[in-house]
Image (cartoon, rainbow, N blue to C red):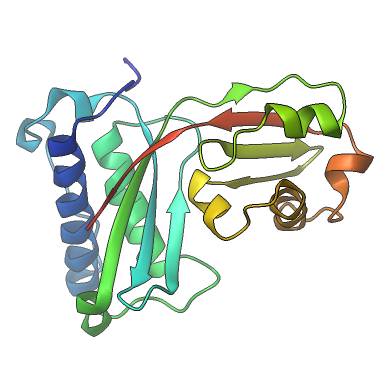
Length: 193
């Protein structure tokens, strides 16, 4: 099956509606909606794709964010599952209620395939990273974590960005200086309500 490589504004708007519908359906029925491929109006969304679905209150507070890094199912299915998981399975938050849904804004981010980043040392790593453009994955042994490009808005300095990413992976804040991390980067195309 082919992996998605680009996405149009219309396809993005469809994914936002699909995410909201999926959350609402799940909160009302406790079931994941079964949507047939024939009901998806865009062939592109049937390709393998990885997505993150972010939920924020209308006041701007994070309320859930779950996603996939590697494409492993059709993009539309990935969005359905990640939307529901963001609403009810993000361990940082209690499950969303149906009443809360009207106060929630949804963002769907479609990820490009992660590419390994080869670097000599942490200074070289910093030189090769593009803030506000690169999503970053770090791996060390059984530890891994990722930050979407959006996270640069809250952590614009590279040292703080990587320190928080190390902590998210369960590693010391200076792991990027201490260890030889595997680093991958990706871009996102994001759509917001």
